[in-house]
Image 1 (cartoon, rainbow, N blue to C red):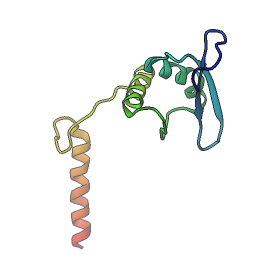
Image 2 (image 1 turned 30 degrees about the vertical axis):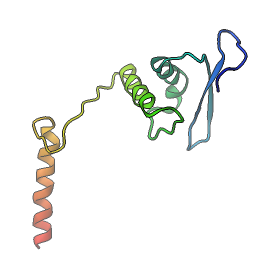
Image 3 (image 1 turned 90 degrees about the vertical axis):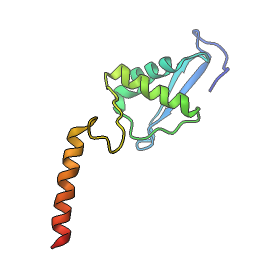
Length: 111
């Protein structure tokens, strides 16, 4: 909610709802909050109570949500490393396990 009467330098409220417990968090903020600021607010007011997200539903632009998650990961010290599919040089461990699973399934199916 934005453009509320100003109170203690805040004129907006960030609403976060835990869809499982239906617990609602209202975090006072201002209309000019940045993505980094929103991630910090989430970390200090919501994450400490609920932990990592399983799903994000947002009425913000997809670019905002992507930047928000990227900043939240940065604040939490989570390093996001993307790899290209079918490129074993970037994720050797997963590729090796997939090869073993493939061999196992072939043996199982052949019987």
